[in-house]
Length: 405
Image (cartoon, rainbow, N blue to C red; front, side):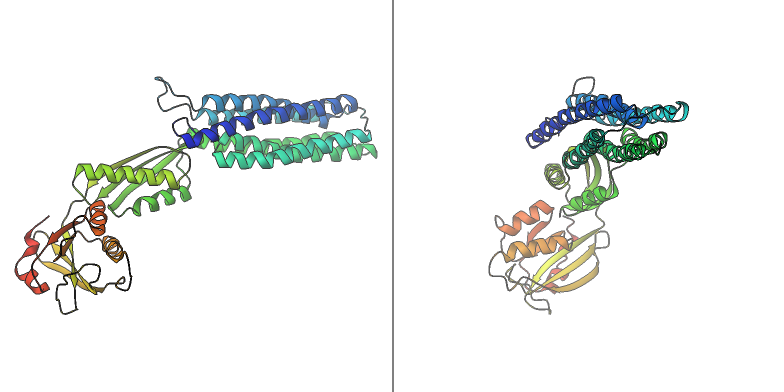
């Protein structure tokens, strides 16, 4: 949602707009409960009014957080993203303050006469319906923008729905001469304290740099490993800061060429941004693969070992795993080409198939440079060599594998 990316500007504007909406809703709820509390003298309604006033201050704090969280400066080069989480923690503390005030009044204040008229009951119903509807849409907006402040605000509105229902029950009981006003006030305390605890835990996790959730980390791992040029993923980690994600990883690439390695890293970073929303920064350290073996792929016309003059049309491929120090073939297998029946693009499909099987070198009788498979192999760090041998046994006898590539 930062100013760094054009697609995120819409998120920023959208989140700030919802912040203003929240201020307006809290003003309406506070005024409604103020009128009812003044006319009825109910402690439960007064407690709900205090709840509204605290939330109004919190909504203003959320809006300030949304305005400032994406700004960067020399003093804060990584931005003020965690400001939103500070706002969420501050909101939780305000909720605890509200719970304390309500509990103190319910336990220490003696019962007092309460007036209940039908319009008051209607007003409480309206005060419950407004946060119910608003929280539904605000929560969706917060999840879409990955904004902890909006999500926290929406959850707090859910507490208002419950507490307004409790207030309605207390007023209705009072109308039939059942004094439940202080009991209702204590029930409001429980609901408010529960909401505050959830907000505090969620906010502190981010402030203490807790890891991304397991599903997101798994998605990042799968995205990195889907890159054919990646030989190994050593580790990957990430954290939230506000509604943004910061990701770090260390990979092993199938090339020793620095320029190619940088291209691979840039491609992975772009792919992560496409698949994982709200990523601010991706830092990937790449190191070349330390080879002890090379895996050779040779197109064959038959399983007896006749080297094919074609690539995509070859019905079989030999895969040979050669130890670099001993120059011995430690593993040999003949695989059937699954793409021989394709009418178009079989060369590219076969190249991708061999990359998936971790081929390091492809030996060919025909020249493939400038063609589709060449680009696939180049991106994956796979070398192509041209040979004149017509049989696989000739390649072995001539000692082609003494070349370490």
